[in-house]
Length: 279
Image (tube, rainbow, N blue to C red):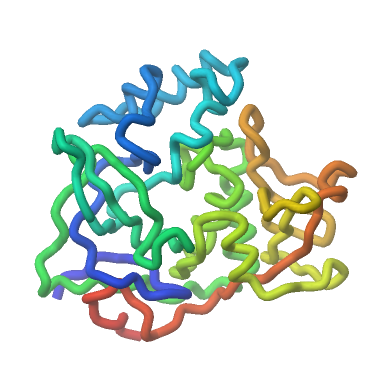
């Protein structure tokens, strides 16, 4: 029998996917009218990711309301990569945009997966029902080694709001993708990751744990992967690169706690409509 590799993890998506991403990467937008003129290269039928990033960087100095990377705030929800399954729940009147739920990206916004919009041309058909969607075999490396190694492999990659891939990461996107590489699905956003994590005392953190950051009276806004006590790999704000560094005094001032996400697959959790992975 043929197989399509897919992660499995902390929650079971509610339905079998109705489409797969067929381009290398596409952004998950909050609405069809949210892309700007500078985003034309990423929303065309055959997206040019590198041209898009170069255009954004030509507007590096502009703020959140401008045309650079910071202007993606409030416009982009996340990112989808080739082969990622989605549930299509509707289209805009033109038919050019598909409203989807990203089944691998867990979110309190929708139990089916992270909600948003993508160009319909970026989606392709799913395999027929007799093709099993199963998770990867468990990796032999320890969970901490796998998570930290993945993070370190992407040092120097640029920050991208909503990013979960080599073209750019945001802070929670790096965490989400690090766990996805283990075959484990965890929430997409930092505050939801904090809610899903088991609390860890700050003086007991280990490699592979997470540091969470929040301003007084506000929810978690930033997350980093612990590489050793007091050190983390993280995706800082727009304009910087993924970096491994010690906690600065500014970070310590907003350090809200630490947590540990699950590392093990749950054998019964597979993409809905698929059969459990052979072990």
